[in-house]
Length: 162
Image (cartoon, rainbow, N blue to C red):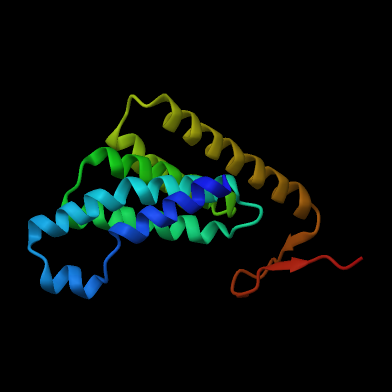
């Protein structure tokens, strides 16, 4: 994985330009070409970063995927890149424990490619994990909170003191 990360970072260095230069100096068709070249590199870089999630912050992978999604939208690149970026960003958010946003990304990915079994499976897994988390939270707080009988009280839920 380390070799692949190095290779993708070198490849990105070769096709990455200063944003000001791209916006001010390049013609729109050249801008499109630059982002079209960067997109698969950023996707692969993010996948490598996610596989190394223990030693590398997940936020770096999410940042790469945000850049891909921004380029896809702005330069109307092929929709397959958007679907892949949404899937991998959902994986990054799942690794970070942000289940709501992960589910939102997967729902968007399913709307782009409803026949992709991998995305549907990941969406089912996220929903299962959210249900499990809610169930764990319920059992953790069960019997520890009691509702106040005063409906006008802003803090209706009180912690039971033992």
